[in-house]
Amino acid sequence: MDNLELKKKANAVRKGIVTAVHGAKAGHPGGSLSAADMFTFLYFEEMNIDPKDPKKPDRDRFVLSKGHTAPGLYSALANRGYFPVEDLPTLRHLGSYLQGHPCMQETPGVDMSSGSLGQGISAAVGMALAAKLDNKDYRVYTLLGDGEIQEGQVWEASMFAGARGLDNLVVIVDNNGLQIDGKIEDVCSPYPIDKKFEAFNFHVINIDGHDFDAIRAAFAEAKSTKGMPTAIIMKTVKGKGVSYMENSAGWHGKAPNDEEYAVAMKDLEEIDKQLA
View 1 (tube, rainbow, N blue to C red):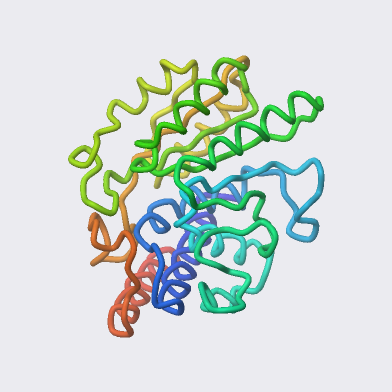
View 2 (cartoon, one colour):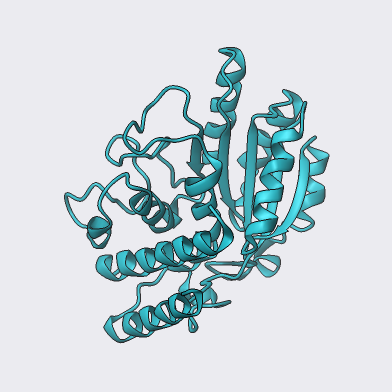
């Protein structure tokens, strides 16, 4: 898929995010929007997956460690054909299979239930180790928030992955610089993120998380890296694509009202026009 098509898909994913969170009247739009380009690339280009056979044994695995950004994952899955896009507004509704955090028992395409911050990467490391032990060649991807990596369990899992040389594992950090309480460096600075992962025996790649050429090159580099896991640290804009949400910590976990929803969709439709 060329970059223009990926940009169009990513914008559709962003529309789905805003629609889902508005429908729920709750949720986490900011970090879902910042990761929308990465979700799009993973599900439309990078991963070996089949929406018609979500549990196929040789599929690549994805774990959303920052599980609160489920709207981003759900929108990517819906746009990829795992379930109807029309179901996105049922997010967080009683009885819906699209709950506030991913549930592997209920939602097609979800490989791991997640939401307790810091724990998703541990599950991903376990999956990568299982592939090695079983002599399988599937790859495992996990997406973490930059606020999430303040959790100690992240580094315990990273230490294990590095020590075991899990070169089938790609850890992606969404470095949008903001968490629920404000700037990550003001809350509990995780910087320098790249040097920390290097110290845990990771091959580290720093990229612009909104540049599809950079994302594509990073995954190619990860695939060619042997004997150690890869960490992709992607610099992103929180709330990317929605004018009033961009770079605003206040939109970490808040739903737009009807007026705000209309403005957000107008912003995203304008992007569609530019891409046409």
